[in-house]
Every structure is written in structure tokens, then in C-alpha cells.
Length: 96
Image (cartoon, rainbow, N blue to C red):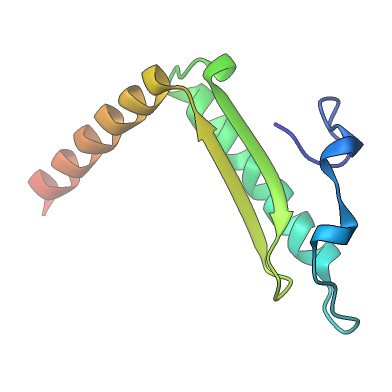
């Protein structure tokens, strides 16, 4: 995981000059929401046995202040997630 407050957060990645900041937008609330979503997604991926070393999750906020989660996967992990998604989709289809 890679967000403010995380052990792996690198403040050098934060460049306030590359972002349009709107005074009335609550970016912190969106970032907090995204941070919780990062934890939930990370926990879910770990629960199905996905190796966390091939995953990079980062919480951020969109220009409107809503939370965004950036997901970066190694090719091997992307294939594993794709397979798990297809299995889940097939099970949901069979259950219908």
C-alpha cells in the first residue's frame, strides 16, 4: 500500500504543483475514503492468496474530491486476479 500515513509513503511522490486545488473541495475526505478502500481491497486480495509483493495500491483523491484507488499489478498477479474474477463470474452465473 502506498498512501500518506503508510510506512511506504514517499513524500517525493506528492507534487502539489501538478494538481489543481479547488478551495471548497474536501480532498482529505476523499483520500480517507480511498485509504479505507485500499485496506479492504488489500485484505480481500490477501484472503484469496494473492502475493502482495506483486501489488501496489495507492489512495488518492480525484479533482472533485472523491476517493480514488490506484492499482498496479505485476503481469503474473494480473493474470491471477483475472482468473479469480472469471471463476467468481462463472459461479455467480451458475447461481442465477
